[in-house]
Image (cartoon, rainbow, N blue to C red; front, side, top):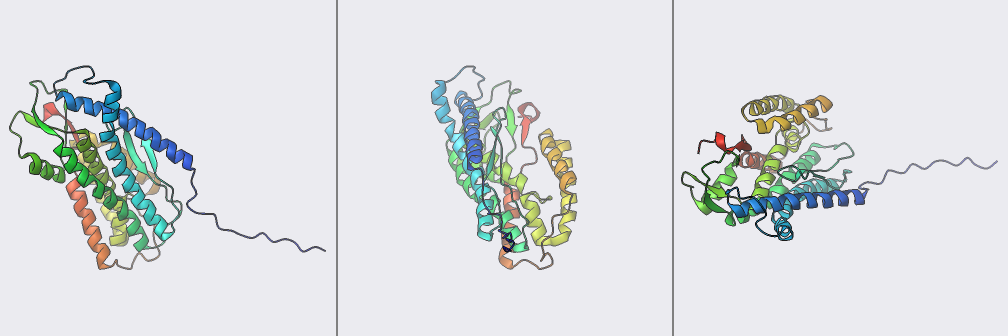
Length: 311
């Protein structure tokens, strides 16, 4: 008799992606953000005047749209690649970044994400993977903010500003604006260059990801530092987000998404085998840096109608 062949088990190869899908989504997001960026540049040129029509040929506007598009893609891309390369370092299977094109939004995109396809076994790995993205994105956003603000200019607001939107200014944004332009007198405002708007959106996305809730980046960091006690932080912060939505309608969508995430996955973070082992001092310091990044990038009211500001 011939011997019965035995099946040989082979592990599933890691880091295998449908590269064409990631390239397609990146291309579509580049197109949508360039189109939106062209609109931002057109608005930048007319200085809140409300003048209708294109201030320059459409093809030329599309080229200027790259100021916004290239900047926001760099910030979001570096954020997700920070996570991705940390996963590669620890051999934790993860996908390439998925970009989300939304051409009808003010931002042209809803951001990007990677899919981690296996459990993260240890606290040290979880912390490093979680903190790598926000730090990488922040490192790109800061110089983009200063360069973008340097290309902005102060203009007089129109008598009727009811159709304008006021962007909430994070602490870092306020500092950079004051450093470059000083304080604006009543009736004047800084007309942001599209690159500065991209940096603003990048900072907002960084702050949203650093909320210490569930399985957001901040939730990973919180669990790595506090262990099971991070569940209490998640519950408290959900209350904070709900209260923010009560005072500013711009938080409503984010609040709904967070509540949906908690319904699907629960408030408890998935366990790691060494959750009772404290982090080393270097990582605790990095956690504090993450808190500082959250503080300087956060704004309680991201978008408000200008007529409610009382300028």
